[in-house]
Length: 230
Picture 1 (cartoon, rainbow, N blue to C red):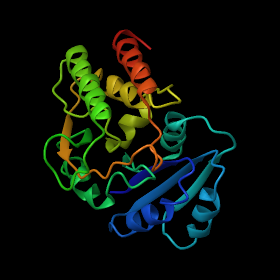
Picture 2 (cartoon, rainbow, N blue to C red):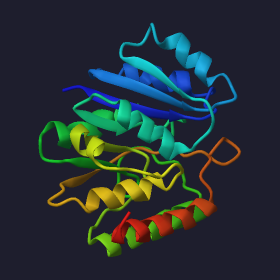
Picture 3 (cartoon, rainbow, N blue to C red):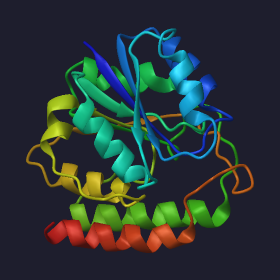
């Protein structure tokens, strides 16, 4: 059962090599698609230098920065795996959690699996307060609008049945990808969405975290928009 791991990357030269080497150590049959979203640092050169060393690794380059959602959509469109998952390039999420994340898909009991930082799991760096509060508000709004009980809508660790995610038309270019894909998954009939506790090694803004409070307003708009259309 081949897995496509999509790694959206924008100026992640500090961590990208470590992420890719740790993905290679997971021991799965992986197609690793790094989608560089117009980086201005050495990300492209570092990934290119590893293509001949890491089996299944392929680099796709956006000539200009378009946003995380655009990078993930490019990866989905290029994917060939029976299952598709997203691995951020900044090591906030630990690749050693991947087998646990994929297990419900491998077992045939799930169509979609979300990691969750709020229901136990491994090591957890203390969250930025307002970031955590915003996540919980957006998750509550998701549960109200879509009649579900997920605990971490904004989590970056998401895994999908490949045919399912390739069949969903996604349009968001920025961080609104997370609410959009959640909305469109939950609008599917008889979808089986599971959550799995994961570790979280969050970054501060000084350490390179990119999502801001402004993205929260976009997430609210996306949840409402995609509940009723789009």
